[in-house]
Image (cartoon, rainbow, N blue to C red; front, top):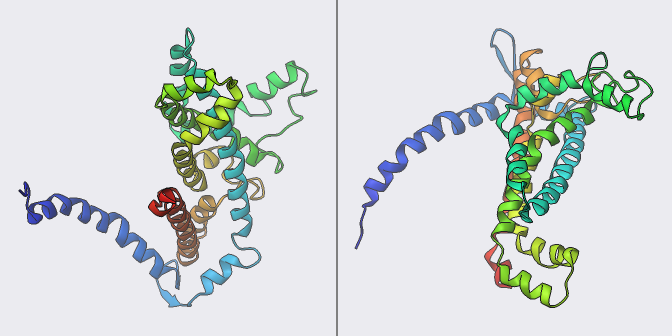
Length: 294
């Protein structure tokens, strides 16, 4: 017996379809079309074919920003995953006071990325920042000006990574902890009876079982880190000398500061295409029924 007709079902989905068309599909189509034009300050349009795409991949294009984005993803997501796994394993033990500490660790998730970036910008200031002051007092630095976190090209991107790690590690911890708490306790009991130590339990039982959850969290964070804008803009605006400039930053600068809509659109199209391909490949490898049945 059919409880709801196809017509009624379509009416339920119609508002969402209209929203998607107006605020997602239409802007993307417009952006793709703009990428083939040179658009002047007054709006005049000149068709130039693939010149914007060729310019993007040429020397002086966005290859440096692409490299910065990859470095940012590797450092930030890698450390967040490792620390999130470590904290999740610790909190899984459910010792006295663990719930209070876990709640306190959720605090960064309640802070907007822009606010977090501004906070870390103040903390990493070479003049009055608490980070260099603490490193000096413990003897790691000889003076608070030894490391110019935001003004030195060697450190600016790492400084942004540190802020991102502080902000997003709790998310990774929550995802992994949720997976660990869903484990079948009988598996762990059997492993203990067989003489498995803690490390063997982690690598032979826990990690393989929560692998889908871990990979899903990892993919979400990779996509999120790839498009990071707020933290980097608040801390360095991509400087100095484009040392912390990622793809999102260069697209924004090209559009707003240099008013080159066509070139910015071409870079955005390439960026979105890469993220879509990554997502499709990842989802196919993670939820492939044939792979599971093999």
